[in-house]
Image (cartoon, rainbow, N blue to C red; front, side):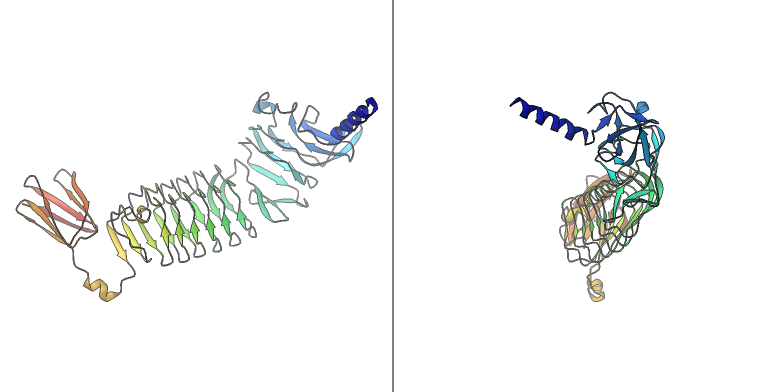
Length: 397
């Protein structure tokens, strides 16, 4: 029995020593490694003992400035090939600015770049068989995919044409000002560009079919968006909180605008709903209080002041129905109003938002018209201004 226990113990030690630990106190030229004597390979890791990477060391004690990773490293007389990074290898290196990676590094564990908030650039040897850089972004070769975006990357970015998906949270909180999404991309995953607060210009490739939840939410300076004709669905809160968007183009093919998709887009003033649109979900345009004109080319029954269809026309003062032909437009009655015996009489403003202002500019009446003739009593005589969409009239009585 004792011999069996001894054999198990020796086997465990051999197995443990032949694999990589997640941390090390062994440093060569300022880089901490875990060495595998069995095949003479090494991986970059973080300083210290197991699981003490965040609690015991400050950013000044982790990797700082520029980190050049060599192809080989010599330790205690043996030469090891550096093949990768352990899990959390650079974690907490908040003062790391640049990383230079040789062709031999082909493996990355999980969480390698966690909290590397100052990392601006990664340079990878051209002959690296697994990874490459393009316009400041790190990609994997096979399968071709976006792998990592340095945390402090900034300015204009053009993505590599050939990738199919932009991963979840890939650019989250990055300081980019412009992004060009190539035609190879089909899906923009959830939170891909969430909180890119300085993003101003956006070009979406013409083969994107899905924009998922929070994809561009909280991009405060984004001013205009054109959704290409390939997009069939816009996910929940996809552009929520994009306060500066004033121009929005929704092209044919779009079927669904999900809940809160464009909520809190305070500057959005006009929108055209395409004929393919089948549904606008709950509060999709909630708090878009500048959205005065809705050009409706869909089959949806869009009415000014209504909370239906995602509040798209709740703040609207001008509804243009593109489904009407010329003869139908001619038959529509003209809005009018006049004062009579202490009342304002409004004609032909069914389902239109009616507002009345006093001489001080205070809104004293705001309702949606319920019939072709509405009589609104007033408490006193004076000068009033009536507004119904683009129609306005001063009334004195």
